[in-house]
Image: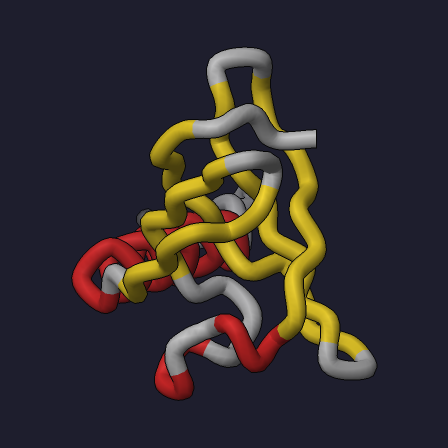
Length: 94
């Protein structure tokens, strides 16, 4: 359960019309399930970053953060690219 407040959340998945959000809280990461229809139309996909407000244990406001979404996607791609490079082997030219 997510306490009342404003948080950064990331859409983990959307299945059968239910969006599962990973919400960054003071206690760590919590999951919050909401109707996908409550999300902005441009934000109904996994890995989208949102700013959400919870009031009385319910979603009161949600805003898509396209800049943060793009920044996180770029950083994830950079990490993937670094990890996918084969380490030099003996005899390879460096």
